[in-house]
Length: 93
Image (cartoon, rainbow, N blue to C red; front, top):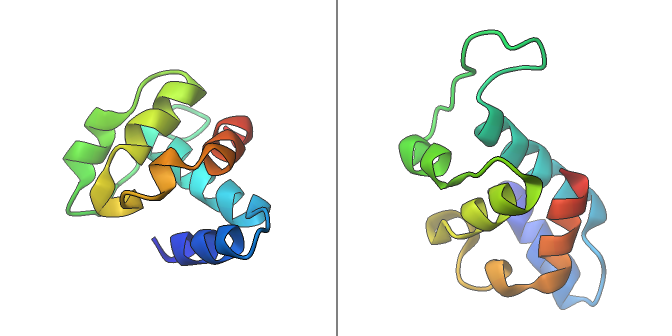
């Protein structure tokens, strides 16, 4: 969530939040996969919204991004509709 302030600031300034979006995309992959590259047991997701976050994801990058952006407690009402941010997340996944 801390990166989202940076994302919003960059977008408001007309910039591209490329590196912050990469960090958010990495978090999304972590939530979606639930395991590391070796397929070891589930990675912990210590978050009050953990069950909702894991339930929101799909299997393809676009559905992972769309599902998690739909969690307004995390992304608010502004970021889900921002096409550039969505594209950065999808392309990073």
